[in-house]
Length: 438
Image 1 (cartoon, rainbow, N blue to C red):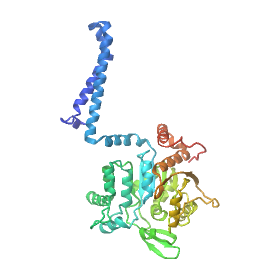
Image 2 (tube, one colour; image 1 turned 135 degrees about the vertical axis):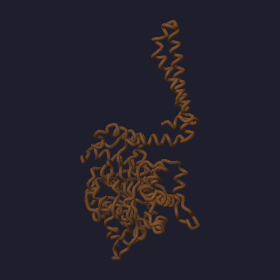
Image 3 (cartoon, helix red, strand yellow; image 1 turned 120 degrees about the vertical axis):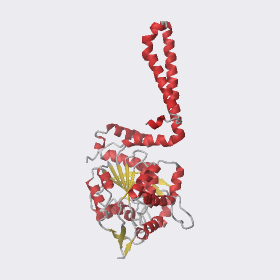
Image 4 (spheres, rainbow, N blue to C red; image 1 turned 90 degrees about the vertical axis):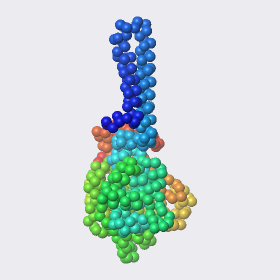
């Protein structure tokens, strides 16, 4: 703190002005009634008190405004105000763990970071294509692409920094590489390990939450297709147009990070998906301790169903088919609630997707389902059909509050604050109705 008193920081002067203002207020309301009757005639006392109080208020206001202006000149208003909001207000939010990869997980994080900074993203590290695959082969590092996208999604920085991290070189020897991937590679070599590189990168980007790789082991996905062929590598599996019968990982005993397991155990809400079933979600769950920790967790465990099927991976899949694949690979007891989009897909996009072999993921009314199904309009209708981050975050938090009524035990103020935030950003109050004790 003594550094704040160093000359030239424009701090001491404003603190002194505010201090004099408080002294004037104290003199007006504390000292004046005792002293003035002996010095100033009683008929003048009210005028002196008002004058001192006015001067005190002006000095306190001027000193405070000058101090804030001085801080803003150095730090920028957005940065220090954002940090204060993140660390004080959003720290009161629920503890949320989201697992996945690809483009689905960043969308979940973008929405939830508006309500809580107690976010942990557990990201798959099985990617072996594109820039991530090249860096993985050249530098023997974990694939950084999905992790970079999650860092950017949680970042509380200027738009230019986000554009910089997502910038992809169009030509030359760096063609295809994104700056963010190269930054993480350089940070790993500078700090000595990937986890420290992520921690320091999060500090640079002012990340709201924590991004963790599912494992530090170098893993490879393998799949058996419906025609009997065996294929290896996430990029190859994802491009297959033949249905996938079975998926496994090498090595089969990959070790998760202890921080990831601890986050799952302490979570209020666990979010699985959205994202590619076989290449984004399952690679996390195939790490056995992660699946077991989710199964033991007392959090509300929500599977966010994809809006559309993926040709090859999930052709003609219903919601029940997705859950069947999850249970077939990891076992039952992972999902409490399935969040399904019930928003209307615009006809032009629907026609285009069907021409490509994709169709909406729906619940089959003739097939039983163990989990509770919740329908919400979480669609953003643009050229590409995706989950709207804001709509999805509100839906997830409503599910959490409804299906875990004990979340507010000992944290009543936090629950009321969360409800106010949902009212402010969404429409209507939190859901009411039957709840499931857990």
